[in-house]
Length: 94
Image (cartoon, rainbow, N blue to C red; front, side, top):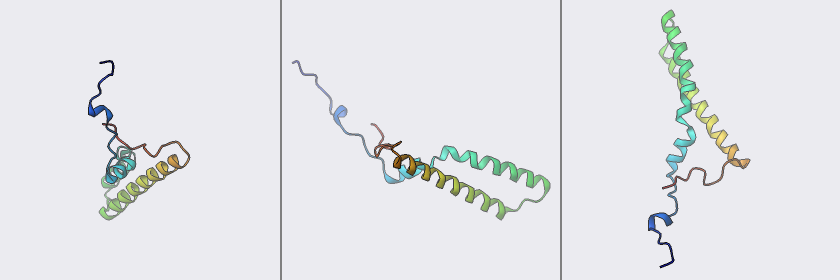
């Protein structure tokens, strides 16, 4: 037998991720610490001074997180648009 035998695992195409996995990975949750850290420092200073307001803290925190996630989505979109990413960029190998 001169032919090299391949197992079925070697010939299967990669599994495309679920849409929610793409959205989550594109949001880049690891980068959100750069948004949360300065807000927590400012909150600690405000609490130390006695001027902490829960509503202001929550609005600032969530608006900053949503702006950061939106910027990450725009970055991915323009990377794809200008050819820096391919359509299979998020396909996970087995």
